[in-house]
Length: 246
Image 1: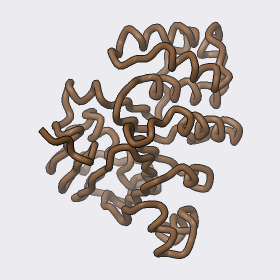
Image 2 (image 1 turned 60 degrees about the vertical axis):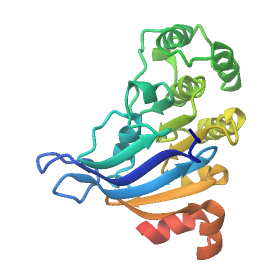
Image 3 (image 1 turned 180 degrees about the horizontal axis):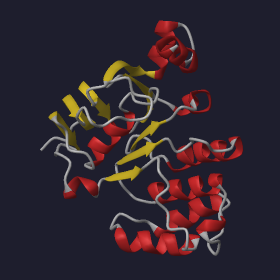
């Protein structure tokens, strides 16, 4: 079987939460978080996933990770529908803080090592050092920026072809944002691993984007290489963001 050049293939994806559900910043009263999304994500790329609150970014990432069941349409991860099998190929970092505050940093890593077969302990310790994190520190004593760094270590320490990052830079101090972006480039396996980064911090992050997806009200507004988007519109990705959503 010939391996597809795409790690993620999505066709006419729809997710309707129902009229009783609403989410922050959404203007869609019918609960339609994704409205006919069709796109393919190439292997070995760093992809920016952009859009305001309520545009469907988190729902799209959860659909790929297999945490949300679509109302209609199709999602394939490495040629298969999201399942237990594909979860071994995907590292997903949620926007919410999911760390156990009573654990030390080392205990968090040991816990993850027992949980994931794809875990690489040596890489985890390299990332801890790169992020200036100390193993004996209690999670509850870490700053918000340090907790964000630890969350990213947990995602990047897994040897998987697809990494999904939901707002890893949100509310984080500039030095931590810079360190997180540096670590993405430091650990990125070019041509072999795909990283999808959802963020509002476009100015800082756009330097590492190879492809960019703009979502708006559950639909794909724009999707192309960052280079093509800049050339076609004659501006930066940040300026294009302001043009699309301003």
